[in-house]
Image (cartoon, rainbow, N blue to C red; front, side, top):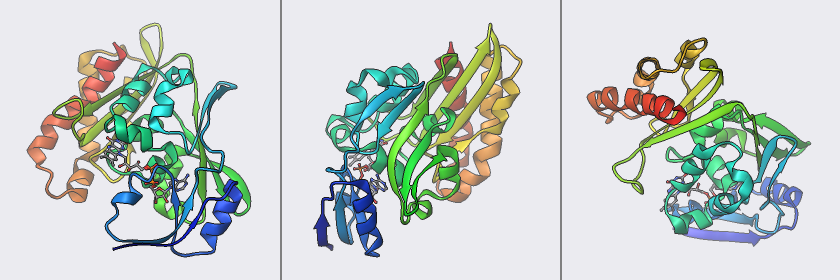
Amino acid sequence: MRKILDYHAPAAPIDALRISQSSTKARFLAGGSYLSREKTLECTLIDLKNCGLAHISEANGNLRIGAMSTITDLLLHPASSGPGKAFLQALSSTGHAIVRNQITIGGSIAGMLPWFNLAAPLMVLDASLLVLESSGETTISFRSFVANKPREYLKNRLILALNIPLVSDRELCFSRLSLTEVDFAPMFAAASISREGETVKAAYVAVSGCLPGPVMISGASELIGKKLSRSEAETVGQAALHELQGKIISANPNFPPAYLEEVLPVVVADCLYGGAN
Ligand SMILES: Cc1cc2nc3c(=O)[nH]c(=O)nc-3n(C[C@H](O)[C@H](O)[C@H](O)COP(=O)(O)OP(=O)(O)OC[C@H]3O[C@@H](n4cnc5c(N)ncnc54)[C@H](O)[C@@H]3O)c2cc1C
């Protein structure tokens, strides 16, 4: 059953936050793609459409994305290529055109659903969130946000914007596992690599989709000081399997272990080697 107890469309984020704090049943309405599919919903709806949060800009070496910007807004904005071609690839493989017009960046981050295409890229890109809380605006790194259990963290807070530092010598790589281009993807990998000549200076890898939230793979640091070859990429793929296998099986007891052993290392290795070469 769905019941809207009350509807507000405040003109400023601070008013949206205040209204949300006055009701235990308050929900922010962004694109509505998730809210409209909740089978039972009884809430005070706070529509963010008039809060001035749909903006995208590039300034001081950062890509700033307002929480109400949609995936389509991002795909059409020239600044979106800043984090790398793989960022556009992650955006364009999100759902289909109709939902891309609807889904907002803030709603996706707040929901942090397993199929959130940008979850792994945002981990390796050192992204951060600008958040509004009672005491004012604050910034939290995307990695800390994930570690803090997003839904808990967002009680009494509103996401204002996403910030992605644009680093010129960093390559972003992205891969997703699905049967077809538009199919549901149960596994995503993203990597960011910096090199000096052919030698890897810094390497970060994250995996998402198969776990409740995205996770960093510590074995990626093995690449530092080496040349990125297919076999080095496969070693990181195996490290990812060792680091995540137990966690994935306990989060999804139905995930066939043999399937996991076959696909996870390949998705990670393809991301690293296919994307960076
Ligand atoms: C058919 C379909 C296919 C999809 N496929 C994909 C896909 O392949 N990849 C992908 O990444 N996503 C996909 N999605 C989108 C995803 O499932 C969520 O529906 C979406 O991310 C929610 O975004 P929204 O803007 O519609 O948020 P809403 O539905 O409006 O809100 C979602 C939640 O976030 C909260 N919220 C919204 N904005 C804020 C804010 N600024 N601060 C704090 N809390 C906030 C809301 O209160 C609510 O609890 C798909 C959706 C559909 C319907």
